[in-house]
Image 1: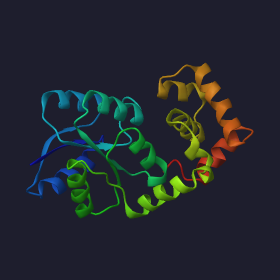
Image 2: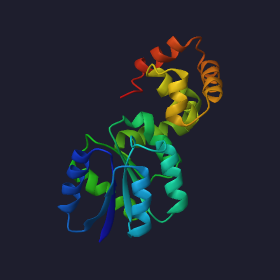
Image 3: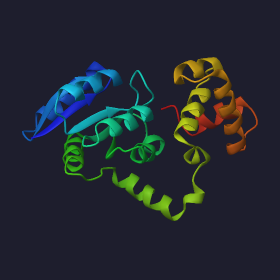
Length: 210
């Protein structure tokens, strides 16, 4: 029996995932969490094989939560379930320790397949993403500018690109205003842009806020 924990801040999404998982006799729901803190409390109290982890949960940033989870619960496999397109978070998720990445528009059958695969120690991404990852190995220098940013730089880029002010970004990411300002300057240099308006335009053009 594969014991699954569902971590998502939307009750309706958790309900949907729970019904899909419960319909399979080889999988059981060990518990649910709506925040990162709840997830870690659940993992301390309950045996779990696979965590279904949403990208957008309250608390620490997604990458921090994923890295902390892998550090504190190394035997637990993580399957990221996200509304964000694969080209935004799949590679970063795998690099941070996830065993798979699945967008929420996939079928229930694909979700069950992904859970089984990562529970066995395998990796799961869509065929399209697998081809993209293979291509990146052969042509790494040809990646888009945002794909070459660090995880923190990418988070700051998305926040600034959403129109948030530096102070708002600092509060959301738990950084100092000076640090965010430094990131903004670094982003402009790395991406060959001149103003914050250029950052916003880039984020919108590349659909990084979806």
